[in-house]
Length: 150
Image (cartoon, rainbow, N blue to C red; front, side, top):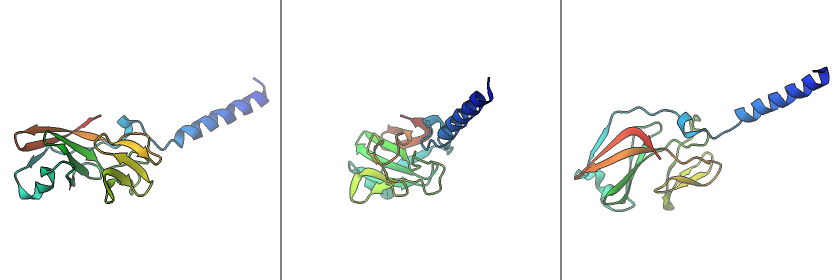
């Protein structure tokens, strides 16, 4: 290999490494892990009254940046990680319910938008859906585990 070919090869190799290092979205399995004990919610308790109507939600402190527990209907609840999937290791990378449109989750730091309940990106730079955790309903008790689902 000539010196010129080595230089071109080195430039292309370094450019490829740089491009790969600048990817802001991570594969789902590379998002920060969340480890927390099972969360048990008794829907009869007054602090969970917001979950008595479709579209209701509460915020929980567990997870990476917190969890939004959202009621789609009387038999379907979603536990959604508030850690945005765009630049998820940044301290400000947090979604919350849009006060003007409560079926949207928005990260003000990067302007990514996610639509409830599927939490797929619908605006901004994020291309990966938010992480959802397993939720089971038994009578009037919800159990959330740290097992991610999609």
